[in-house]
Image (tube, rainbow, N blue to C red; front, top):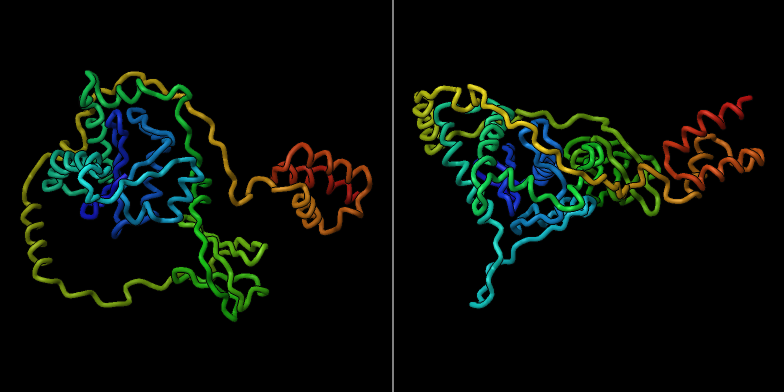
Length: 363
């Protein structure tokens, strides 16, 4: 996976077949959040049937940049059971060949720049969504190009070389968001508030003046706080971010003014819009085989699906009933013991408490 700073494009290629998936993201530098969004889109099933690329790879080969060194990016790959490998720095030893990740990615980037992005001089996409739609239209043709060694296309080579056990399915977006959490050590203010990126969160009053650990996800709207062995949360924002457009604009330099004049000259050139939108519609390939999938095994690192132990489940039941379990009858306690021997899933246990145990206590 590689990012282009100038064109803001991300690419995930398959090493053997050469099948590529790319997206445009408007970011400044190498942004971990944009990289994770692109990674999920590349591994998730595509709505277009002509683009069957999906599944979690066994290994990702990247350059040794800020994204590969990011702790939250490495945590997400560890939860998804994906091995991360980076190329070694350039060696001075004459017999030590340096492994590089850039060559396999930069060459297709150059192909996209010469074959597709040249057309932007005639029609520039108005939004990022439109640019990605044009890019996906080009990638369908790119993946249908001949393979570098075999006598079929890149996509046919990918479809013919599935692993024997099948592709590893990707998790849902909501579950993927919980993996992108990174700890941060902060001190709670005297008003029991914590500011994160200009947004205030009201935490438990017992944490005033304490140094806590924030579990803040890149895609979460909720904040979790950890102090010692106890975890608090989720907490929601109590204030909005700092308003935009509070500072004056910078004066344009001579180079920026010259670039605007060149853009105005490029806008005068004419090219039919159908060259980018793909009209007339190309005939679609009939019946591409659907790849076999392995079910996603949820690691549940934050214990959001099941209780870790039966003792934790009993404490949660007592807290939900607002009474100690010792006040229950012998038959009710035995029923709870049988339920905890069968499952520790939070949804199953709370359903039993609401539908069976609570009505008995009310009567």
